[in-house]
Length: 250
Image (cartoon, rainbow, N blue to C red; front, side):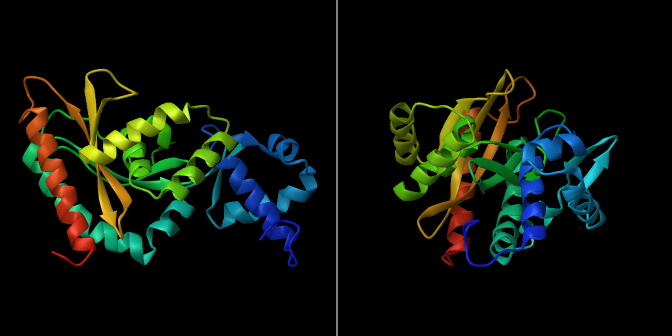
């Protein structure tokens, strides 16, 4: 319902505005900055900040405020996600142990991907991505996989949300890349964050769309347990098995 809808809850609206403002920010911001950004007086948001802090949705760090992971925790409690994790985590642990590399599971959150589960490498080498980590879909292997295996309509929604977030990208150039991912069933690309790491990712499917993407940030070198091609093959086999279990075909 739009802000011009029939029913209004001003206090709730202010609380949601604060959460939406703070959510994408990496650093805490002050009450004054929140007031200025929302176009509301300090007195309007003062009590709302206290209530949000009391309920654990935001935390005060010095003179500023930052969102906590409470909303993420609430979202993770949803039955579909619990079902996904129940099937995925045992398979992820087995994969990490077999290939000697970390892996993580990501889902779509607006125009970003968010990591909802991770398993660290049992060995001495490897790179782990923390739970709750977010990155624009257009800038990650997980994101490319998640976008590739959506309906065209859903993909267009993601593109629109990405532009509204102020990110620029070349849609005519991106679409063929996503088509290639759909055809291959996985993606392999250099990590956009770190040198010497190759991210490969494959979809976990439910109802013919990607519900999640399972990704291995592969660290190559003398200590690697197996080569990248063999590890990637096992990743695809793992996502296929999880997808079958989610569909009741296992």
